[in-house]
Length: 288
Image (cartoon, rainbow, N blue to C red; front, side):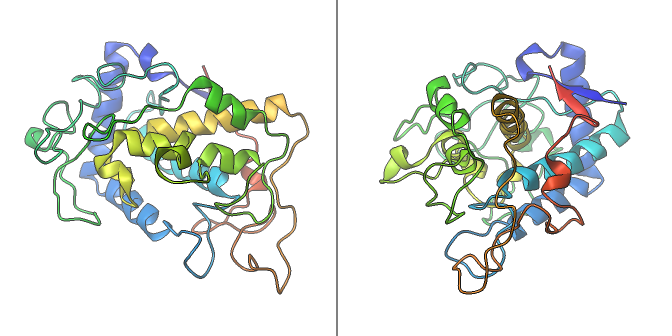
């Protein structure tokens, strides 16, 4: 049966409680921390050697689509009514708007150490201890809007610029790609500072705290953010009928990207799936 992912700002009080309770149950069962480990493992940038499956690569979108399905499966095992909501950061743009409410994700962190003090994922609530991390904090941290050096969330026009791209991705298939949809959405730009962080990347920086590194999955907003990106992939496909995941074939020997990226019909680790198998989600879920 096809289920629906909703805009987080439209969730009822009961839907919020069910989502939170399912998240906490997945955390207690240890499955959540395994997902954090997976993301840390595949947090591979351009400069490293070996395959890039999750970031700075064409498979950024199918990899995260499959990753979201892993959590959603676990949530629905706890409560079959729960699906992943998405956060439209082009519309809900303040530190007090949805999803930053005490009955859902809680708000920003305190100025001294970034610790989130309210909501069900605050360390003080006793249900959300950070156990898989790249730093020593055991509590969830945020700095919404980056208080000491403020930045804004991406705008609708910045997102539309990505959606206007006519091809999925282009050579050299990494963070320096200039004209493809994937990198415009992932958000690696030229220059320095905030101008070089667009769309996906700038949202991670705006949230700050735990969302800044490979262990960004420790902040539940990770899933709402990536569900919105997943929706954009669907919208891009609708806008550009017939446009497919690229590259269709892997780069050959002698190419700097040989063995480093996943082509359309190659297996995408850590799962036995291809990007092509994930291009259409219509048999599983839809977006409201």
